Image (cartoon, rainbow, N blue to C red; front, side, top):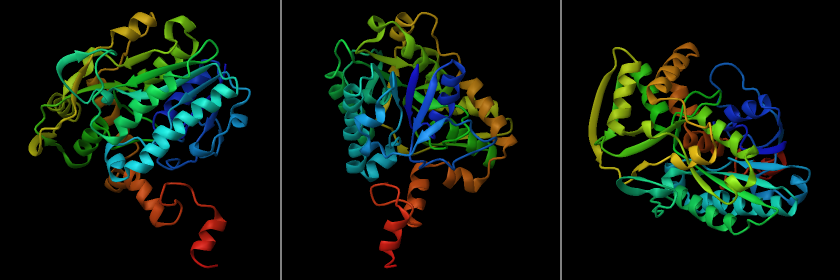
Length: 350
């Protein structure tokens, strides 16, 4: 199947692209390379990539594709809070524009990377896909809006599927250090301390990057009637853990590290447990395999082998820090558009 993968040069895309290719799919990426250089360890195995800003995609760019997998986004709660308007422009408006362009171009299947954080402050009960969505950040709100708008495009010729991923973890050749497990393991390896700033009580559902990739692979080729217009929580109930439990798994994976729960930021309103039975029912044979303990051990080994440095951990592999640095050097404009050489020259009066 000829598939366009947006965000192929990002954290999840760098894991998913080789998985798709190994499964026999023809993969073309679409990515402006904002995080191309966030590499830890061996070089990623990248597909051919169209360097087109998501906000500029047209139906002509999508002709000849059977499917679109849409990962690209400003994917970070702190970033969304710093610049909510740009978050909505890219994550909401450009995503809906992409879906409409895909439908116009004759693309038949559109897989959208949503998030379990759409459930927001959901309480103690494990939520299903029918639960009320209570997003508490601009990032999560943008995902809710895309699901609503793209679902309205579904018809006999166009099948959107919404994969609500739990919080991702695990090694990727293009690392992210600003997601909970990856972050805690990094601190443990670099400092010997697993430091939790909240009170540790919020619930988080977690899922490994490879298990996310497998879910998208299966939705790509599943019978239309099994997935048409549906939303699926992606993860496993075994990885519904409190932040304190996640931190405890990190201490086990990094011998000699100490756990410190400061509570200085208080209780986090983002707390939710998730039911993942629907995707297992719709896609027989699918189950998220990676435990948090296995992921922590994988990350600890990768961090030591690379090796991970404090500078890389605090700057290179933190999304907001990377974007701000590239804005300071003039590579990116104020709305995170890559600047051309002509634009840079005009800015400095040349």
